[in-house]
Length: 404
Image 1: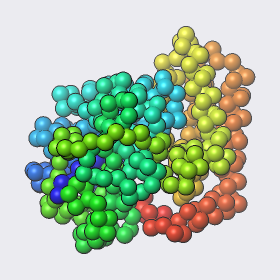
Image 2 (image 1 turned 30 degrees about the vertical axis):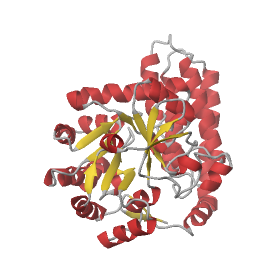
Image 3 (image 1 turned 90 degrees about the vertical axis):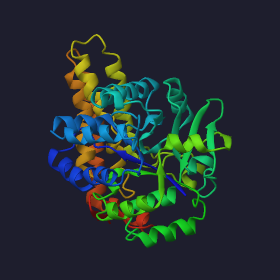
């Protein structure tokens, strides 16, 4: 049995040093120590440039150096991504390219010769064909998708062959959703349960492909990192590029627009990215109204003397967190929704020659977002959405706490 495991590491640019340190101690250091103790273990790793910058800025250069060392030891394969973790299919083409190139520049600077990615990690595995064309154009060889992208249903992927996107000559590998997501739930509390899940799945006894947030190991769910180490000692691990190289069979596919949290009914309804842009979520609608307004205004201000400063602030403001925390299914944070809306307006205020009418337009949308979010929370509407979402599913963990 072969296990190709991709771990995704990301923190938003506004993450506090205290929280970052806790995540490093609970997840990043344990993961790297597992690899140090077990020299035959291999993983594929995505680390967004946003996090790389944070590690350097806050004095955690040892994490980067250790990753470098493990790349040289052929235990880690690095992938590329988008620096500030935007949902790429929801962004204009120019923003997609910019975020990818920013990520390349940042990680090339810090990882030096160890930075030679062949594959690409889509934030939240949010995929559409437009984005795939850009990834191919920029020279990447493969990307990983959730298995729901195959046919719109879970359980139909054959993990014993590689795939290629129709008309693009871009290789694709699909993750096993169930065996990836158990690292994010309270259900996985022993090695025995993992083997039970593997047997029940009945598709991955030869090739197991998982992809999930590295923070799931230790930070979100304490103890999961210990189970992970037990498992990687018993299963032969390899990188995704290595796995793609040993497959003998290949199938041409045309994946569906989707993410790693998409549901079959959502895809049938034409809502592939519901946690970030749900047409039934009025806060999402306002957030994207403000986002696109700010993008357009900054794009028109290239001759402004403060353009570069505003441009950098906009890059950071496009992170996916604000929309995710406004979904209320079950993720919700009034603070992040509020602060993110304010940050988008502040982008415009950086510009020297911006018309005050434009600032006022943005301010009005910002206030609508904040007032609606406050109303949702104070009226109990958020709790109703959460309860409806969680009633039939497994418990979810975030930052060591159960999401209720």
